[in-house]
Image 1 (cartoon, rainbow, N blue to C red):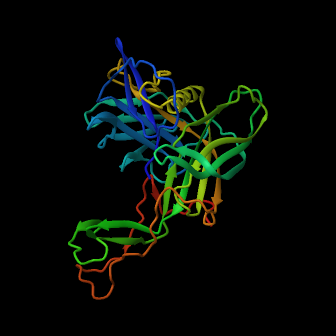
Image 2: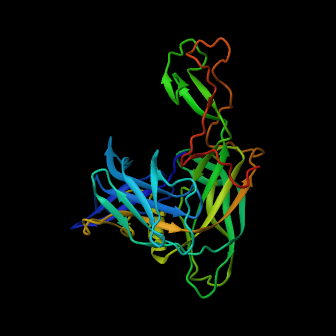
Image 3: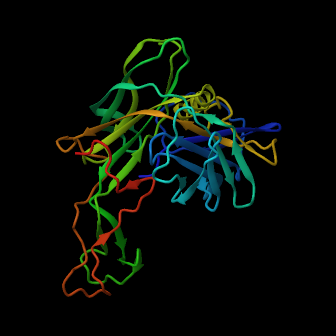
Length: 386
């Protein structure tokens, strides 16, 4: 599943407010107001995150578009993406993969380091970030993942869906400002890695092939190795210690996990420590997400971060580059005994594989496909898997 996030981005242009919006979930209602903005295509949004967790760093580069009357964001391929450690001079290239640019699998940042992002666009424009300091994370004492029969109401389904709530406990350090941001990744084991519809798998890809006479018009290809599907948080969860400085914070809800499937999973909960500037950015994003019940929602602020065009300082650049370290806890969650129905239909494995004997298809008979590493899939066993 791709990252499901509500993007609503604002920037100020002379004499008018420009809004880009991709609204994927509509969960609340507000009183309507008269809209006072125009839409504009072609604005660039860059979202980058350099994490202390391997496999979790990425940069997404998108452009606002209108297609068939629907406004949204399109991924921009062909960019050059580099992050630089300003203390050591180390530069790391992020490589294009599906809808984001990903770091090498072993890349991670550490507390005390300073990092900068540089993006060279296909048209030659160069965007850079202000230096980002990686703060020391606050340790998580405990993570609780509790099942709820009625987790949240989904208007698209016209019913409540089941799932889990994530809560954390931690000791907030005394006499210092702390700003927290939580994210999670969940890992579910896959039964097969590829489905070729109206075709067969040869030479690393699905190729068209006439499957007339076959009971099913597709073939499934089992993963060559163990393989896990990765899902990400679709919400923004932040907290500051203004009213809890130096205290123990107990059972603070920091995320929800809808019951997409009933497969067992590992949940990796990440508690990041943010700089004040990064916290303010995510606070604005959270306000936008929480109030994105329609285009009549009043804009809370301009979602402009720490990025700039090195050749045009007057250009507004939407988005932000954040470098942060986290305290991380992995929890194995068993779900096979849950009675409620999941929101996704998952077909059983091995239901329609190529025959191995007397195959009418071009050789060699193929039943396996690789688990290709990406933002949404990995062959690396997650910590805590049972």
